[in-house]
Image (cartoon, rainbow, N blue to C red; front, side):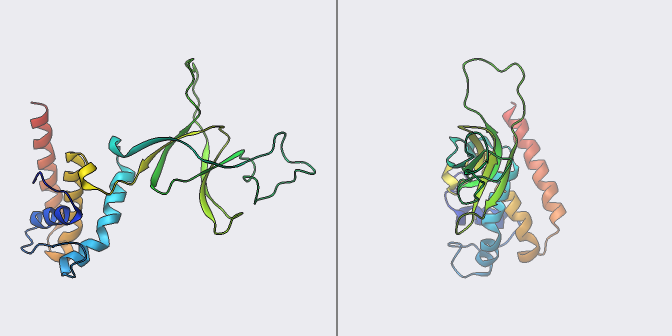
Length: 205
């Protein structure tokens, strides 16, 4: 794989090379057939791989932004539940869903100096807050001062490790092949598996 895949057009051209497509794109908006097909799938393919894989380079650990909090002591007159002010029961806290978040991996409390001998999974729910206009996506939980761990969107190829770039080029090739080269995708998958095995062997010495 070329080492200078520094922009989306480079990524797409590498995928086109894999399927034997002779033409190249100048950019994803150049109006060519290949660019049009690639433009339809590029962002979705990239985000799907970031979301569903275990890529560490896209992991974010941030203090969650608190939007709403239930009143101390619960809901009673005059503190009746109001969707514009409080998270929906039984949740105590509502946190913002980051714009670049593709998948919440974990929600946890602030780290403590003492180790927890019996850690328990943290419950949370992702929902739309219809108490504001327009509705916004939120994370509901009962954890105060929560730390959010999530897979974030990384769009700059220069920020990707080589193995992710390789995997994305292969995935794009499999999706471009039927439309542009009328190729059997299973043949490409077999070739990708062989390439991955060779790369792993080389890395292990």
